[in-house]
Length: 170
Length: 80
Image 1: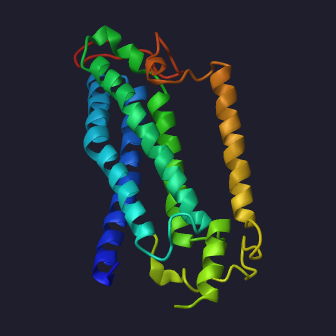
Image 2 (image 1 turned 30 degrees about the vertical axis):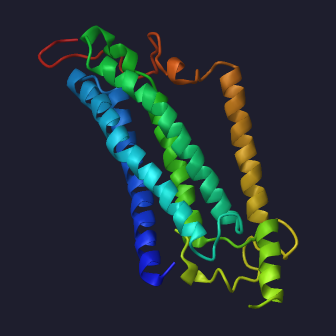
Image 3 (image 1 turned 180 degrees about the vertical axis):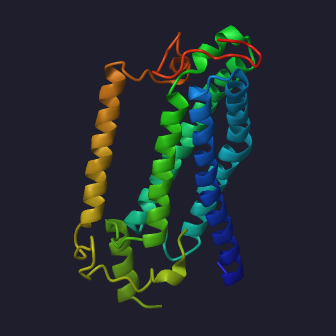
């Protein structure tokens, strides 16, 4: 990739990845409020907001982070399977995105309950969203740490590739 | 966040920094991460198999589940 394009791709990747992390933190706060508040308006608002944030912030940012990460890896010397830290980042991002997409159905059901009759609100006393958001936050922090520290270590494929290019400079 | 300006091309994998291994083999940090991931996955499987944490979209909807939090939700203007 030409330097200006590379910088643009990197900007998109960093923005979407860090934005995803921040959005998950916001959802975690809403989830705690939705689970523990005694005020019906707060509970309803929290779950309705979580579904909106899910579809219009979390999902787009997760997909943008995954796609821009792929572009960033394949378009630079890092590659996708050459370094353990890149591979681990990819696995965590794919896992987190897949779980998010599946969990959106649950968020939809919870939002429907939140919009329903008051006597159903007790069903929203579930720690499910808090647990999922906490796990996501932890995973995304690990991804961020990997991206910043870039711990050394080439995969077998990366070592072979490195040796081949070192032996035959062309 | 793979920034090629950070030295990917110059990496030798032969240093002795934290978690660095020789060229032949897996770095220690990868092994430790793998063990931690395996332990977490195993714990999740145990939790799911014992039914302690019901999973799957259909099962996220509790049937009258309470979780130790206040059990009364009141609309504004109502008294619990």
